[in-house]
Amino acid sequence: MYEALNWASSYLIHHERDANAGEYIMKYILQVERSQMLACLHDVLSVEQTKEFERLVHLHAEGVPVQHMTGTEEFYGRIFSVNSDVLIPRPETEELVYYALEKINDMKSPVIADIGTGSGAIAITMKCERPEADVYAIDLSKAALKIAEKNAHKLDITIQFLQGDLLEPLIQRNIKVDLLLSNPPYIPNHERETLSTVVVDHEPHMALFGGEDGLDLYRKITQQLPFVLKEGGIAGVETGAGQTEAVAAIFQKAFPDRDVKIMYDINGKDRMVFLHV
Image (cartoon, rainbow, N blue to C red; front, side):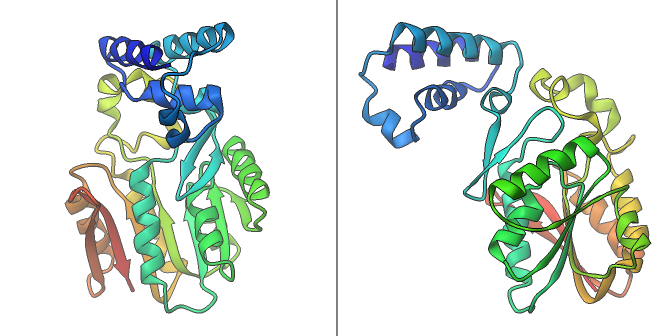
């Protein structure tokens, strides 16, 4: 196994992929946790295991995300099903959830909405962490909502799924929320050519690109927020690298008398904007 992992690391580096992907593939093949895998590094793989490991490493080198091979990704300590219909949940988004939970710690039975839910990672995690909350998960994509519903069922929780564009489903139903969260598409259209094929060829473009400057969805969200957010409510969004100042300015312009804060991730990068109304 040790030699196989070494080969995978070198091979993936040569193909400009994440060298650690070999570990994820090996864990998947052996169906073990990382600690178990490391404890038996000198075990010998079977012929079948070796062939499958090499096949999946080659696939990743060609650009297929590891998460699409395994069909899963971990988020906030839970396993979510993913496929090419949804954005693969990122660790950065866990921090949006963490800060949001802190901010509503004193709210009783909050009403929460996740806009552009994708796999449902944000909405489902909020419901798992705050079981008494009333949670809405919204997406324009029917295919994405199917995956989100599957994840909610798998984790045995009940939230309400609505199909529609951004906040429109809430506005149409006159639903007011205490907390609105979103990790909207924020990659500028012109960066399409520079993205890794792992991303651009395998994840839904609807969930990736946010217009010429990447900020179109933030502008639309702020226009709709006054119809949805309760007095004393909170809105939190994730942003792309280098976008937080611009996104904060969009929120501040729409809500000149309200508190807008830029939040930093664990690496000290500005990655979130929170609005308190």
